[in-house]
Image (cartoon, rainbow, N blue to C red; front, side):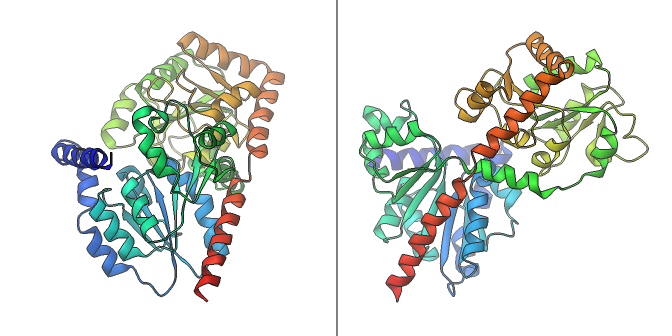
Amino acid sequence: MFFFYNLFIQLYNLTIWLSKPFNNKARLWIDGRKDVFKKIIKRVEHDKPIVWFHCASLGEFEQGLPVIESFKETFPDKQIILTFFSPSGFEIRKNYPGADYIFYLPADTRRNARRFIDLVKPEIAVFVKYEFWFNYMRELKRSYVPYIFISTIFRPKQHFFRKWGRWQIEQLRQADHFFVQNQSSADLLQKHGIEQVTLSGDTRFDRVHNIAKQKRVFPPIEIFKGESKIFLAGSTWQPDEELITELIKLNFDGLKIIIAPHEVHEARIQTLMRKLPDSAIRYSMADTSNVTEAPVMVIDTIGILSHIYKYATLAYIGGGFGSGIHNTLEAATFGVPVIFGPNFNKFHEAVDLIERGGAYNISSKSEFIEVINTLLNNQKKYEASSFAARNYVEQKQGATGIIVNYLKNISNNLTNFEK
């Protein structure tokens, strides 16, 4: 079956190459990997042990970040190499100061995997969530490098657990440990003979809690807010924005609106601005002369959304009318009730928040407006929802400590072995 897996990898790579002239992400994916091995040879030094963290994209990086930071604090004498699969992670975080080296991960061919492991010589490898690259896993095993998976979730319908995916289960059994988000994932792995499992929870809870403690300020938003209530729509796509434009038309008294689209390239921002009132402003162009009276602000920069939920009275999380909702916890940690569309069932934190009363799912404009009306006009219900959201995040913290303690034991054992 490895033959077919490697064939799939080659076909996938070919598809990206063919897409390069027409797709910016494909171009970045290809160009970013150009001469990656030469870059590794030139930059990576081996005067200190190296621990390798790999993330698919930006979302997985946010999950891995608390572990990276805690590990670095615990072991300042070790180097961290961080790799990304996707341009949406690498291009945004390529200058992250917490890692000593940051690269695109070379495509998962047998040759690339062997060369990467031989050049980097990691002491430990940590994969975040779903990054199951079987050639890399095989080469790590060949080189006697322990590797773990963190913040993983498994479901019965995933390909690992189907007849044609049984060979992949055999590969998963070779991993040193899995840190899973929920009990059902642990049960599923154990059912298939994978016993090296710990129910740690989701590191995102630690991440968003740390963000809430940072207390960053954003003067343009503070001036924009004034004494008003804020409805913040984060990580939105076009179907989400159709709801928001309906809300704007209703002109709720004392309510201002912030929209942070998932994509912030110029063409996307201009398209959105054309749908909004002329008095709407862009965050990057806000100043004291135009921000106070503006009813709508569009966030046209990256890296601040998770911090500005603290200004929100209510939050809408985008993606629910597409492939799935984005991060609800970034708002919930500030005690902000969250609203999202119907595609949320794969996200256990969204299900949990609904059950606890900290979140509301809607499937139409009328439901959307009804929820907003209720929360804005029923103070008792709003306060209960706000408490439920914040309390949920507080109760779910601790995954980072569990994972780092495990890594600490591995690292200490390796150090003692070398002695």
